[in-house]
Length: 114
Length: 194
Image 1 (cartoon, rainbow over the protein chains, first blue to last red):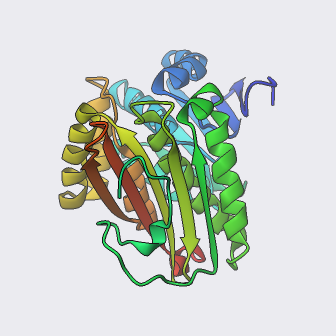
Image 2 (cartoon, rainbow over the protein chains, first blue to last red; image 1 turned 60 degrees about the vertical axis):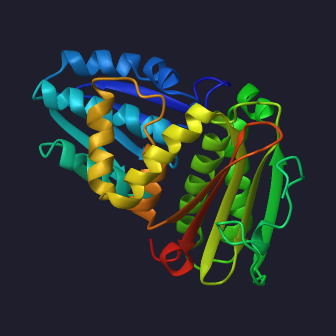
């Protein structure tokens, strides 16, 4: 990971715009996620289309799922094209992230093996 | 049982606290924690969940899947028990048992009157409303307010892992705190299939 104090890393790419999350996201509070996702949110705000790849995140706690869901709602309110790449072999990703499509039917889910 | 009594024998009672015949377990383990220790180093919650999930996963055929689900459930319950402990110096407990057809996970912590009341209100919704719809509502609600707790963790356990959730909240006569016991039961076959 990119910091000894973190169990996760977020790598950004510009073409096409997106972010790849890797590692375990079990932060202590919604505020901690606000900080962790601040740069991700800013990049999303500047792009019309964005991809978030979480396939290499084996665990994310409910505070993280809430924060990720809020990013999906932001995309919905600004009518952005959002793609989420999930792992076909990680149960919570298939089930929980699948439910986010009900919040924003234009959310595209792409599956890959982690 | 007095609230001051040490954690013991949760598997000898049903979720309502009444005595029942003990079931033999294929694997069984319990731990006690001081919430302060987990608040000071939050990753201890995940570390504990992962350890216990690894411990139990040996009983399953699709080990990686079972491990992922069990760790997810354990972590949510342990995080909740820590967060909602009114006195962070008062012990909480976590126990799990694999009875063959089910996996039971139980936490016990002590909360204050306000948290107990709001948890009860949430539980009433969780038991009567559709989990998928409740999930959607809680996320939409979070955009307009900052709820102290969305309950999203328990909602996803019910919605995505078919968890049966039983809760007992009881006021302690000696301290005024509310003893909160949360028991989640998972279908073992489902864990091997998820």
